[in-house]
Amino acid sequence: MTRRYHITTFGCQMNKADSERMAGILETMGMTAVEEPNDADLILYNTCTIRDNAEQKVYSYLGRQAKRKQTQPDLTLVVAGCVAQQEGAQLLRRVPELDLVMGPQYANQLDSLLAQVAQGNQVVATEPVHIMEDITKPRRDSEVTAWVNVIYGCNERCTYCVVPGVRGVEQSRTPEAIRDEMVMLGEQGFREVTLLGQNIDAYGRDLPGSKPDGSNLHTLTDLLYFVHDVPGIERIRFATSHPRYFTERLIKACHELPKICEHFHIPFQSGDNDLLKAMSRGYTQEKYRRIIDLVRSYMPDAAISADAIVGFPGETEAQFDNTMKLVEDIGFDILNTAAYSPRPGTPAAVWDNQLSEEVKADRLQRLNHLVGLKAAERSQRYMGRVEQVLVEAQNPKDPTQVMGRTQGNRLTFFPGDIAELKGQIVDVKVTEIRPFSLTGEPLMPVLA
Image (cartoon, rainbow, N blue to C red; front, top):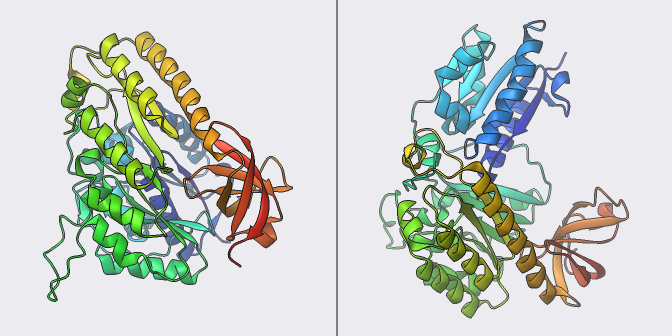
């Protein structure tokens, strides 16, 4: 009987991409995916440690399956991702039923690790490794859009962030390997690619020097020029950017290259310079504002999204007001917000100026209210406009509608048959606006 697997993914786009790769490996091994964890013979939790609540949820899910394993000893339990990297062998002590604990750098070695498990071993794979060029074929969750990792790890040392400790140092893939993967995706019918990196603007700085002919493909900007003409790929996005490394040359490239979507995700984290310094972010709020001004000078309609943290240790009401003022002045299309959560092994976690949960919750609520107002304001510009929407799926709440995204990454719904329209770019006249999504009427397909 075919073994069945179930993967639950927590956290960021990098984790989702890793899960697709691991699913591809499991299917190559002859396994079949199932929606319901209790129907699976192998359960894999791909974990996130950025927020404490995501970590606690993992332990809760794991507890249920550990209990099940006591009566079904053939069940294989795997914890992958950042919690696995952070906790390592301690996870086995906490949950002895676990078979495999593996850090993010081992995502493309899942088959060899499971072979060790099959021999009766409990395996912990968290030692730093060089990430081998990946020949695995991901099981993509979408048939239209795809993630492509371009750089793993992070060399930054933000005082609140656990990522460098769990994802390791920066390791860039070669431009040729990235382009080859994109060519394959284009041949398979994918229309949009998101280039991924924890700090994507750092791409290439760890690669050996220029090529013999003198060309240099070793910056993100050069990479965009190098992959822009891949046949079949109509849209290219990239994330996540760091204000410290975001250059005018990169902005100009995005303006010049028609396939690059005018959507930029540039986290600012705080609008206060003293807090940014305490966070070790390496820029000021003035520099951040200049970046956004520069983006908008080249591309006035560009969509800007970001991340922000409230309640960082020592944050005063006046410093929080500086964050609110930045959000008010810039007007983000989307802003991901979070209350500061102390993470093990990070400098800020042991500082003695932690804020109360009540203060953090109050500030988060106030910021989220402003975010909604500003997003609604930004949506106004779409009313009555014709937007090009790449159709990805049926609207799960209304089977008469399809849904997709504009160039600016705004989720858009309109009437249509998914069987006919999936993967097409359609001109849609916007008839209804909401803070974070749009509804419209189709005019005609742009691409067959």
